[in-house]
Length: 215
Image 1 (cartoon, helix red, strand yellow):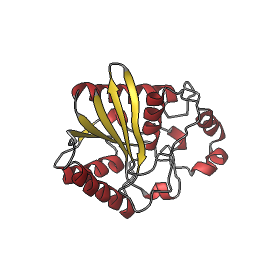
Image 2: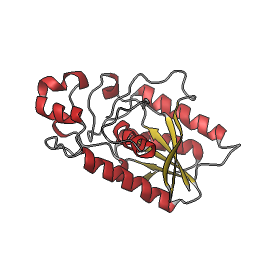
Image 3: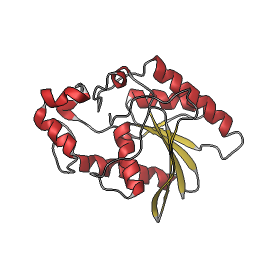
């Protein structure tokens, strides 16, 4: 069994206005940096008295990698890039505000909202392809670290995939839990499948982020 701690990146300027990020390489804002620093301090203290984190993996997008690097500095670990946990490519929806994208790209927004695994967002990635990519990446990481605990710093959309797969829910089922910036979400991966250990821990923050989007 491998224990994986999945962490969403810190807050970005686009998160604050609920703008679709996808593959756009957006930097953290000051709050996002503070969130990552708080998590790093929290984990450094926590792992002194419990099993340490053996490795850190990160999406190659800046908002995730910078978050991972800040946390890694506190733990004495250097993040390894894993492109498979990058956010979904939302194509023509990238850069749009979530609640207005139906006005600007009605057909693409309709496909996004349908959660059809085969629905094609122009210039983007199908939900089914995205699901396969993320699950494959997590399985590969787990296979490299059997019996260990590793961290994966990723994105809201990828974490939604992870939550569904570990909960054995379809891609079209309603998600029943939030995914907020720098939350810690623990799963186990073994030969018998994925299981959720704990989800949505933000005890390191003074208050949880208000942002809960898949971008």
